[in-house]
Every structure is written in C-alpha cells, then in structure tokens.
Image (cartoon, rainbow, N blue to C red; front, side, top):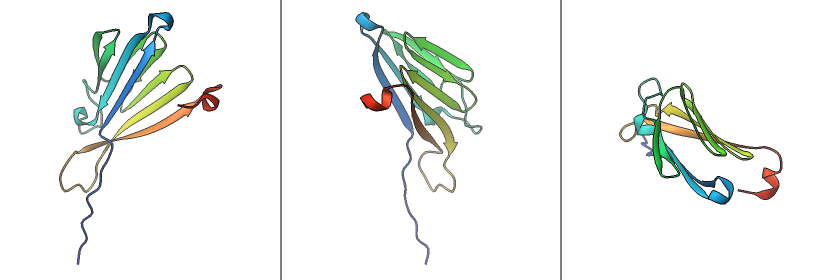
Amino acid sequence: GELTVNGSFITEAHFVALVGGAKRKRAKASFWAAELNELNTGWRVINGTCGGHYFKLGVAGRKSCDEFSIRYDFRTARFDLRNWTVTVRGGHVFDRLSGPAHRLDLSYGARGDAPARGL
C-alpha cells in the first residue's frame, strides 16, 4: 500500500534585536512564506519595526536600523547584525497534500569573533 507522511516546514522567520548602542532601540523583522507568490517572491514578504516605526519590504527592498540591516532580492533575504548573517530563501512545498504552499530555508553565517561569543 501507499504511505502518506505529513511533514512540516518553516513558514515564518522572526528576528528581534536591541540596536543603537546606548539608545537600546528595538528592531523586529519577520519573513512570511505565506506572502510568496508562484515565483517565490512578493511585495509584502518582510515586515517589522525599527524603533517603533513600521516598515514592509518586497522585491529589491532594503532597510537599515542602526547596525541591523535587511536586503531582499528576488527570493532571498539577508539579515545582518554585527558579525552574524542569516539568509532566508523562499521555496515551494512540492507534492503537498494540504497546508502551506511555500517554505523557508534558513542558513546562518558568522564573521570575526562571533563564533567564540555564541548566539
């Protein structure tokens, strides 16, 4: 007989950071797989706040909030904070029976002394 396996994927990625040195300004950003279209891109894929000010990003979007920066190209977003980089890529969920049509793949990178300090 046939076996059906129900799996799960990451469909949201959220980032929160205190930036701005002594200002201790809060930066938040979220990447939403549900906002991706058939080309794995979109116009309202990332939203968040920088010091309480709302923003949203789509294709070719860029946002800096002190030392936290976001760049969103065709289907890939790059979130940089100090010596850390998180890359988020949107993708299709193939052969799905139900549930989300898109997933997120995340990768992490570190520079300088970041690996020694930890997450």
